[in-house]
Amino acid sequence: MRLTILTTLAILATSVVAVAQTAAPAPFGPYAYEWASAQSPKKYALQGRGAYDGLAALPGGTWWRNEAMAKSLNLTADQQRKMDEVFLQYRIRLIDLNAALEKAEAMLEPFVEAVRPEDEAQMLAHIDRIAESRAELEKANARMLLGIRQVLTQDQWNQLRTDPKKYSVWRAKP
Image (cartoon, rainbow, N blue to C red; front, side, top):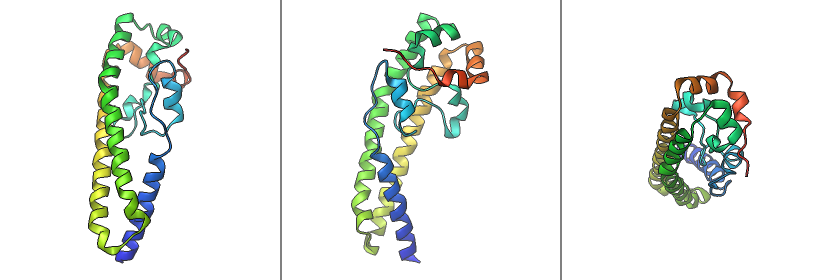
C-alpha cells in the first residue's frame, strides 16, 4: 500500500515538474497577450479560471493596449492607465510567486527520481509547499484580474461577457 502511494505521488510530482518547465518568462509590452495565449494557464495567465471563472470573460494579456479593442469597448485613456497601474502593481509579485512555485517543484524532483520509503515525509512536505505556492499564485492572479475588472464600466463588462469569442481573438500590435 505504501509503495502504491509513493508511486502515485512520484507520477503526480513528475507531471508537475514537467509542466513547470514548459515556458519562459512573460514579456511585458505589445506581445504580452500572444505570449499568455500560448503558455500554460498557470504562467502569467491573465485570464480567469477556477474559483474566479466569472473573470474568464477578460481577454488575456494587456488587451486594453490594443487600439481597436479599446475603441470597440470605448475605453478611456484614464481606464487604460488604471489597468496598466493594476497590471504593473501585480506583475513583479506574479513573477516572484511563479519563481517560488518553480523552486518548490524543483526541490521535489530529486525525491521523485529516486523514490525511497524513508523519504515519504519529505516528499509530502514538498508537495504541500507546491500546493501552497500554487494557491498564492492563483490568489494574486485573481486579485489582479479583479482590479482590472473594477476599472471597467458595467456596460463594458457586459459587452465582454456577452461576446467573449469576439474579444478572445484580439492581439496586441507592435
